Image (tube, rainbow, N blue to C red; front, side):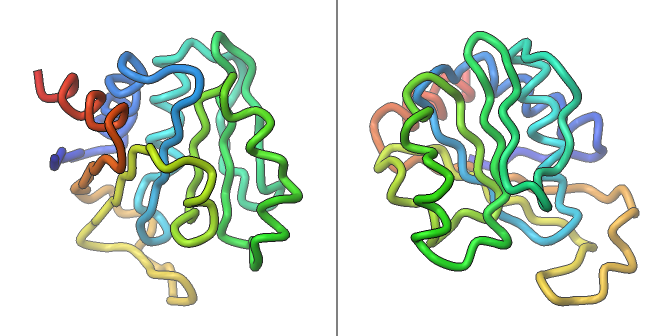
Length: 162
């Protein structure tokens, strides 16, 4: 499934829409270049879930827990270098009670759940890891490619299509 976000507000709206179809135990993996809008998407998801507090990028703290019903666990795996680093976060202990969103998790946190919603964000401008991010502040359209890895996440995609 592909969705188009023409602005940051659209990205938040898509996150809020997805929030109506997810709940405790769901894992969402986000990937895309720097400035793609991963955290902006999570802000909309958080709003849709009714979580409290400001949602910011967890780049330097690795993980934020936003309280709500259910809680939202927001992880940035960019700086994680090994499976031991992932294990140290104990994400599996909160997975069943929370909606867990992992940025930059591909190949690092896939083992948390065989059934997850994966969202790859593409944009015309933006920086890949280790590139000069001079155009990150340009609000250009994004294409979100959503895919499911199991029955439950497939049901989420089907609900979004209606």
